Length: 299
Image (cartoon, rainbow, N blue to C red; front, side, top):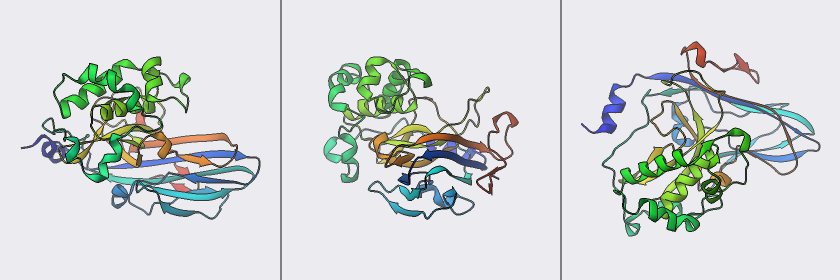
């Protein structure tokens, strides 16, 4: 029996409530794009239609970007606007899948749709880290073992610290500064994978604390990566660096520049930020969801 099948077979199904509520103040009417919809690959797992909730109500239109993510456009009126989503996901209850036999592809065998994830990008300067990557991992076993070695390195190299977070930090800068948040751990691991000719893409979404010991930190959106090995994409999480349960994907891209949760075309001030991702009827200490958000019950 493969390790992938054994993880799924033994896990109980569960319902996971997810959501967020964000408030922005703008001094004048301001266009905005959000990426707060569950990824199309998981839409069929939702118990109700995915919808962006907005107060005060404004027209919202949606489109798919070049990576297949669902994006919402709206015009924020002057003043404060609150928006977000709330839903329940039917989940297998399985932790992240793994297969230590998954092999690395020769570059000439990488599918066309994965080639762009071998190239440097704004926050993942694999070209600047190539020499260091080959020094560190050139002698390691290829495939799954090499990617795990990269995750182990990123996890040990960086110290997690919200207070030092900045939106412009790149993989090379994080490597030099040895500090960051989940996006920096992910950017560094992606850059090192690409430097080793392993396709890697950036992911954003929600990850529950299901199966993790307390205490539980306030929930936030998370970053991880997907790596192309053995003919498919696999989730790797350099920040947590262990299989997690309840990983809900929202969007993927080359790096964080492709998947901002909100993008306003003008100045704004953040007034509210809440997120939740927890099992319905799960451990009381894990509960962070409000009973009602933006007029919708969260159960």
